[in-house]
Length: 556
Image 1 (cartoon, rainbow, N blue to C red):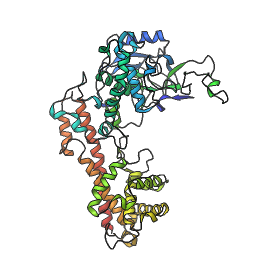
Image 2: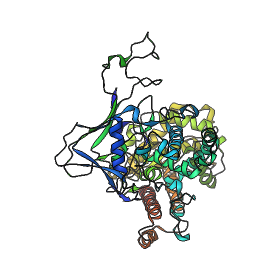
Image 3: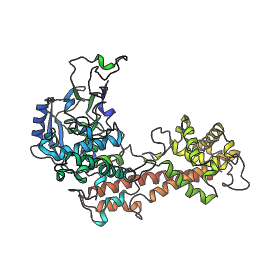
Image 4: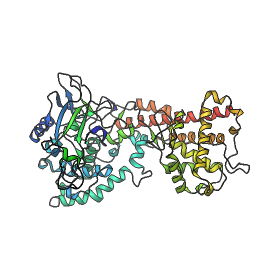
């Protein structure tokens, strides 16, 4: 199966400077490009004369020549055996295999770190010389004592501004998972990489990669690798990583992904089940064993040629993985974990009445109930201007400052359960869904300017007593539920905004601080910009729900 690699590329490659608000410059050695091209020629690469590989401020880059390049043109053919992967590494038998995810990144970083330190004896030496010598300015390595990284004055430490952001969560908060990015990388280095280095460099232990050198290898994998096929998996792909990034890309990498995972064969082989048909059997024997860079649209002459490593990445993801952010990113969104919402609920709802999770059947049971309810269609929720139907991010706030339906359902279900005085074990899923649908209908009615004029004529909009009140009715009022839900959502945004960035700094001050920073304070500038963006989204969402409450009370 031939697939465009932008659909399966989970990590990406070089950054491009035209689209990023802030960037870190990486220079290659003067002869790196010439040496790279000589190495490629020996390895059987083919590069269309309509493009040229050059040295650029972010390493190497690709530019078009004198004529327009048409769509669907093969620009580069990259031999499969030229990629650096765990499978192609000389120490592959020592590296624990991981087919995808963080484990695949770490395994490839281990293989790459060995090739980087053995120098000219590496089969990929001339290719590796074209890679950045400095660690990309990703937050993982800020202020970690890594060679060539910037030092920051006391008032300019970027981590002070990154605190509480999505980038901070990716780096340091384990959330609902077992470990954070930082702890996972450190743990892998000490528990896996160091024992491998001890075997590889047994006779010369002084040559074993240090932790900064492993960090360097990881940063290159994080910012430049591709998932190429079912044999090599995640790989460093020469020339493909020379195409820098833009969201509106000119080219993509194509590959026959379904190769034999044991030997990489494109044809049927001894590892196949001979009783089952194999689509690889239809591949001609003389098929080119290449990955191909193919143009996605016409490319004008004398311009840089770009690829993309993802059209949906947020600024937090770009910063953590690649060390830059875009000046305005429509993909930005903020997330919460189930545990974060549970802790917030305990803190804020205890003030309005004595309750525990046992009152709604227990926290694990509530999680299972929410999961079942979230699987329902809920198409009507898209009629709201405050909530969006989002099947990708369960508990989130998007770039339009609207919350996901999963976040809405969390608080709506919790409040419906708390206000329903019947024993939790007698409730059934269908009855709860009816109550949630009534709550949603109440919200949609209140959002409608025409309907809210008649809100005081609707008996269902009477405000019920707060939880725990002796006069509370068994069946909760949708109006009371939606009012309390709106207040909780506004409080959720207010609390997160308050802990985003440096403590005690108001939103109005952030722009002034950003303007006063010198131009070479790139990490701090990026961190402040990210904090400003996220606080702006949170403040907009908070204002929207506060306004909703004011409007609803005005109609009651």
